[in-house]
Image (cartoon, rainbow, N blue to C red; front, side):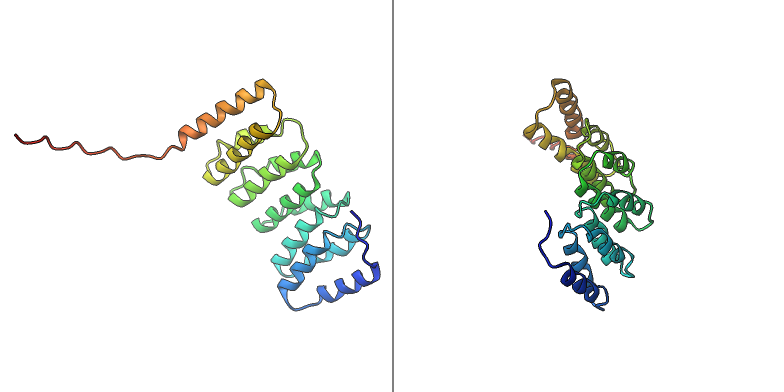
Length: 200
């Protein structure tokens, strides 16, 4: 949806925001800009992605995915190579907002990221992508060494079974994987010590 805001006013507001000393203000301005979806939003937003503050960068990078601009895909893909886990997770969230098939291929290699939040955002980006059989990544994530990633994948698969049409073959595969997941996550109950026999 295109914004009806006056472009000159929006540009002036952004210039003020970019130079504001308050990190929170700059971050919120960058986040809000992504929702404008105007033809120049991508160009106006990219300087925020180079802000000295990692928080402002993360807000801007996520917002780039909301712009609807085709250039956002390549820009966000480049951010996935950064060392900062918060930046990688912001890029994955931005990619998830794009909801396009190419996102699946970019995001699936981050499902096993050592940072649990990055891994969960990769699963989310795969989930949001309209790629056929995207649920397969969720199945693989059930075998992750990170319980938070496993739980996230299990929740997505349960939702899929409850809310979307799934082929009988895929339904069986998902149910079997979830059964294994559920069995492996049962609470461990310590054995009860044998009671001493009653004395007569």
